[in-house]
Amino acid sequence: MSDKATSQSASDYQFKCEWNHAFEDGEFAKIFSTEILENYILKKRWYAGKSSTLKYIEVVDYFKIGSEKNTYYGVLIEVNFNEAFFQDYFIPISFISEAEGPLETNTLISSVSFKGVAGHLIDAIHIEDFRLLIFNNIMHSSKKQKGSKTLFHRSENIPLEKYVSSKFMGGEQSNTSIIYNDKYVMKFFRRIYTSQNPDYEINRFLTEKVEFENVPAYIGSMSIAFDNSETITLSLMQEMIENEGDAWKYMLQELKGVFHNLQRKKIKAKKLPDTNLYQRISINSIPPEIIDFAGLNLFLKVTKLALRTAEMHISLGSDMQDTSFTPAKYNGDYGVWLKNRMIYMFQNRLNTIENNMHKLDGEALALAKDFLERKKEIREHFLNFNWTKMKGERIRIHGDYHLGQVLVQNDDFFLLDFEGEPESTIQDRKVKQPPLKDVAGMFRSFHYAIYSTIFNNMEDFKTPQEELFQAGEILYKYMIGVFMETYVDKVQQENLNIGYKQEIEFLLNYCLLEKAVYELGYELNSRPRWTIIPLRGISCILKNKQN
Image 1 (cartoon, rainbow, N blue to C red):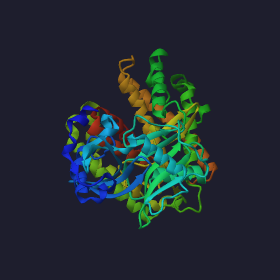
Image 2 (image 1 turned 180 degrees about the vertical axis):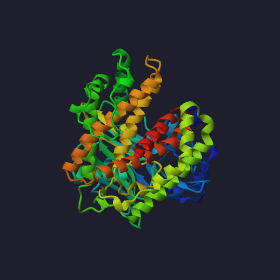
Image 3 (image 1 turned 30 degrees about the vertical axis):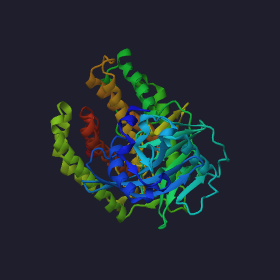
Image 4 (image 1 turned 60 degrees about the horizontal axis):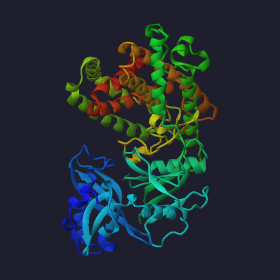
C-alpha cells in the first residue's frame, strides 16, 4: 500500500450505495464532484486549468462499461472557472477493494467505502483489465452493446487481433497513451470537446480516404454518442511508428554541429552570403560558403520535410465530396472570423507584455518597447486581411505544426497529432485555413531550433553569442528558401491552389507574425529569457513587410 493510500482513511468517504450504482446515487455524485475530484485533478499533468481559479466541478454525463471482473465508469466532467469559462474532461473510474491488493501512488483518486466495502477510487486506465476491455471492444466493434452510449470502431483495413499486452507510453502531458501489443498506440483524450476530435477526423481521413502513408495509420476509436447526434471522441488507436525520436530533437543535434563549424572552420558570420526571406532556393544553388557552414545533410532533410508537408496538404485538399475536407474560397465570413480572432489574441498579448516588462532586459527589453510603440501598425496588419484579393484556397490543416509533431524514421518523416492549436476552440480548429499557416508554424519552429541550440550550448561554443545569432538568422533564411522551393513546386504540380508569389508572401508574413505574437505570450509567462526569439521574429517580419 502506498504512503498516500494509507494516510487517507476509507472512512473519510463512506457511501451507502454499491459501486455498481454509484453514479445513480445523489450523495455520491455530489461529493465526488465537490470534494473528491477537486483534490485529484489539480495535481494531474493533463489538467489544463492550473493558471485559472477553479470555481466548481460538475459531472455532466457518464456511462457504465463492464468486464467479467469489474464495473467501470467513463465520467465526463465540466470544470468551471471564476474567469467565466469552462473545460471538459474525460476520466475513466474504477473501484478496487482493499482486499484486491496495494496501489501505485499515481493511480489513487480517493480512499472510499461502498456499502461497507473499503477500497479506493482509481483512474481505470491504470488497470490492465480496463485496457483489455477497451481493446477488445474496438477489435469487436461490430458487436455494439444495445442501448450503450459508447461507440467503438475498428478500421476495415485492420484484421481482428487478440490482446497480448499493454503498457504506458511516457513523456506526455495533455493525453494518456497506451501501447498495445507493441504495435499500436491508444491515445486517451483527457480534455474533450462536444464534437469529433480533429486528430481522429484527420487521421481517419488521411488513412482511409486518401491513403497518405506518412502518418500513423488509423486503427480504431472509442466515442460517446448523444441523442442530439453529437459525438465526443474519447480515444484514438493508431499504428505505432518505430522511430529515432522527433524532428525537434533531430534538428537540435544537427544544428549543434552546424554552429560548431563556425569555430572549427574559422567561418565569420559577417562574410556569409545573405539572402531574402522567402526567396525560393534549390539545393544546387546554395552558395558554397553556406554549404561549408551548414553541410548538405541539413538541407536534404529540410527538402524531405517540405515534400511531406506538401503531400499532407495535397491530401487534405483532395476530397471533392466530403464537405469537411473540400477546399473553400476566401469569403467575408472567414475575414470576419479571422480579424476577430486575431484582435482578441493581439490585445491579450499586449496586456501580457505591459504586465511583464520588468522581467526583460537588454535587447529583449528594447524589442518589447519597440513592439509596444508599433502596436498600432501591428494591429492594422492583422486588420488588413483583404479576402477579396485572395485567389488561393483554404483547406483543413494540421493547425499546430512544428518539429515536435514530426517523427524521424531513417531518412523520412511521419506527421503526428492533428488536434490543432491548444488555445483555440474546437470549432476554430476545424475552420479551413490557408495551408501556408502550417508552413509558417514550421518556419517558426526552425527559428526556435536555431536559438534553442545557441542558448543551450553557450558553454560549448567559442564563437560570441551575437555572431552565432547573426549566422543563425542567415541560416534560417536558407532553410526557408530550400523548404519553399520544394513545397511550392510540389503543391503547384498537384493543383493545390495556394495563390501566386505576392499572395504567398503576404500570407506567410501574416501567419508568421500571428505565430510569433502567439509565442510571445507563452514566453513572457514561462521563459522570459527566451522572449528574444519571438521578438526577433516579429522585428524581422515587420522589416521584411516594409521592403
